[in-house]
Image (cartoon, rainbow, N blue to C red):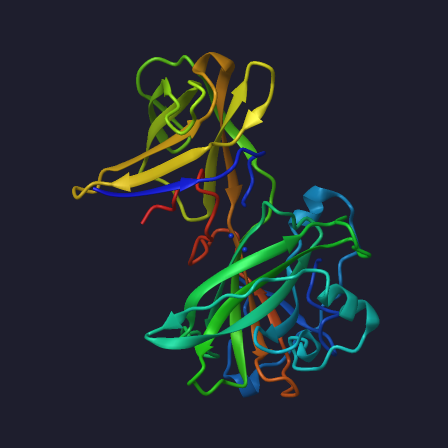
Length: 352
C-alpha cells in the first residue's frame, strides 16, 4: 500500500492551497466578462476583441460577494524587484493605491525544476471581497489556442491577506499565487491565458453523525466505519486520541471538496491533528482523521463541503510594456473545473 500522512496544528477548519466583481481597474479600457455558455467565439490572439460590460454595484452581503469573480490585479517575476510589477494588460503600476496593495502581501521564495530545467516563477496578485486564509487557489498557464504551456509547472504556493487585515485600506482580501509558466531557458510568449481554479465560499454543513455511531454508516460521500480510541503515542502524558476511519466513495465530483470536523460536548469544533489517505494495489481507498481528544469528549462528527469554481483570464501580458486586451471568462455552472485545487489534508482528495 502507498501511504501518505499529514500533520498540522489544531485550528478551526480551513485551508492552511489558491477576488471584486469584474476585472476592470487593473487594465486600461473596458474588459470583457464572458460566460462560456454564451455564444462566444474564441479567435486567435490577434483577433480577440473585448466586450464592454457594466460593473455591478458594490454589495457588502457575503452571499452576493461569493457570486463575484476574482480579479487578477498584478503580476511580477519572482526574481525581479516588486517595483517592476505590471498590470494584466502589460501597463506599469503607477497608481499609489495599487502600489500600496501590491506591497500588502509578502510571498515567499519558491524554487523547482521542470523536465530537469530550472523553473521561472511568476507571482499573481488576486483579490476578492471574501478571500480569507481558508481560500484555496490553483493556476494553470495556457497558450492562446487553449493548450498548456509545455514547460509550465515546477510547483506552486500561495499566501493570503484577508479582508480587514492589519494594514489594509481597501475592502478586499488578497492572495499572491506563485507558479511557473516556463523554465529559464524558454522563450516567453507575449501573452498567456491563466486558468484559476479556486475555493472561496464558507464551509457548509452537509450532515452529522453521533460519535458513538455503531457499524458502517454511509454519509455525504463517505463510508464511515468506526471511531476508535487509543493512547496518543505522539505525547508522553498518557493522553488519549480518537481516530475516525472512513472510505471515500467513488461518486464524488470534482466541483466539491469536503472535510470532517469533530464537535465536542462543550461546543468546540476541532480540526484533525493527524490525517492519512492510502490506496491499495486493488484500488481500495482508505482514510482516517485523528483528533487529540478522547471519544467521550466528542459529541458528533460534522461533515462539510465547499464548491470548486473556475475563471480564465485570457490574453494576459507576460512581458511588461507589451500591451494586450485581457478578457475574463467564467465557465457555466454545470461544467466542473478541470483541476481541483490542493486543500487541507482533512479534505477528501478528488476522485480520480
